[in-house]
Length: 243
Image (cartoon, rainbow, N blue to C red; front, side):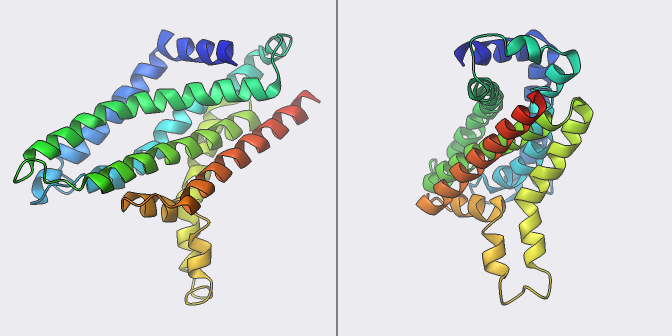
């Protein structure tokens, strides 16, 4: 697994993919958080990073499928997966190696945003007037969100040998898992009856819960279950293709 992980990390940074993904993420998030007047934290009048945590899932929706689209689709297309399975590694090790490499890349992109948190911390009146619990909870929520999106990206890349199709499928599935259940719960037939239950199946509900600064064990179990489920389906998809 370590060999697969190292190989994937090197592949990301030996081409422009890794640098472009990180650069685009930070550029878009920086413009939205600091420059554009409708979302700038400087126009809020109080120290908060809420705009960043509200906007980050939207950028992740495009960033993460772009990172994961080549994970297996490129292997299928070039025929190198057959060579990979001849090595002394299992399907599980291959999936986990690729999954962790993609997740680490996303976390590397997220690290520079700590500068935003420090800046807001210093800009508060008085300095340090920032809800640190909510900020920490939001970062933990972002890490869990990224982990689920990467797992979804692994699945969509395993389904097809076309990277563009994998990218588009990844966007669609991430959108449905994050916002889809919230929209479904607003259908009149569910309002007042099952709307809260349906919302709890979506990531948005649990991400919002974590963003309040309280890490509930139910949210942690939800995120871990989603990651495990998508990776298991990915393994099943690969085994079927191999068969």
